[in-house]
Amino acid sequence: MSEKVLITVFTDPMMGLSYESEPILRKLETHFPDRIRFWYVMSCLVPDVYRLVDPGELPLDREKAIERYNRRLAKIYEDEESISGMPINMEGFCLFDTEHTSSMPLNLAYKAAQLTHPAKAEQFLYNLRFATVVDCRPTTRTEEIMVVARKTGLDEQVFLDHFNSHTTRDELELDLQFGRKLGIYSLPSYLIQWGNRGVLIQSFHYGDFLTAIEKVTEWTVRPVPVEPTADGLRSLIQNHPLISPIEIRETLDLNSTEEVEELLQPLLQAGEVTIQPVPHGWFVRKESES
Image: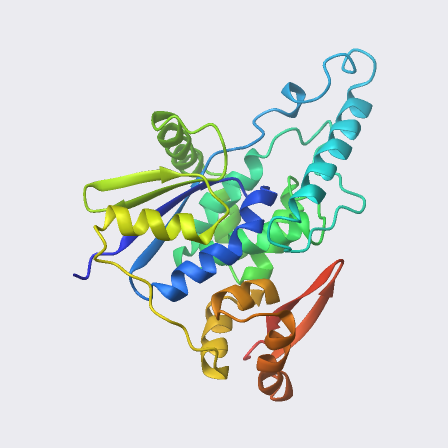
């Protein structure tokens, strides 16, 4: 019974909805220890921003049309903050402009991270989302993507070579074809598989994932209780060196952010972690061991 449940996540690094779903993923991996594997499939949410701007504005001024779209998109992000409470900051949001008209670079960046250092690809994806919706960086630009690669500890030259390679574009095209084959047009979507059984869901509720896992595994894979201990928290942060208190709260079945703060105290006092304030909240960042 060592077979793992595969959860394929169809997403785009710019997605606020996927960012707000991180507490669910953290809870799944912790409550199903060594029984779940995540795989991320890029789906390019915005192939061409000009398809999304107000068509009546384009003949007048393409730059202003994109600026207005950025403002509308920022409002969507702000509304998504209420889903889980993961903080979103849209001050000065300018993800798209006339020279950066697609989220394709972010999708290519994730595929490049997979090819550069597979074990760090998931952390790169998280950091890229953080840069986009918390730091509010224009991550459609190559120089911003390279900052994230550097912070994730990827070899910059190897990453850049992959980012610019035809192989990476081919890998991304396979992702896009997979999504089209399954008829996925709403993101994020999740394909939950166990052997030759599978179910496709779209949800922001842990209970729906739990039900789907029980269904595809015929109730042979079940969650286990998680004890909220300092060692458990330390292990969580080791795997996720940048993490929100909301993720910690959900993962360790705590009742409040205050309980998270109390559990963090020994790690803070030992200098193992620091608190990073952000607009509307804060994150825990693991200190470098170097």
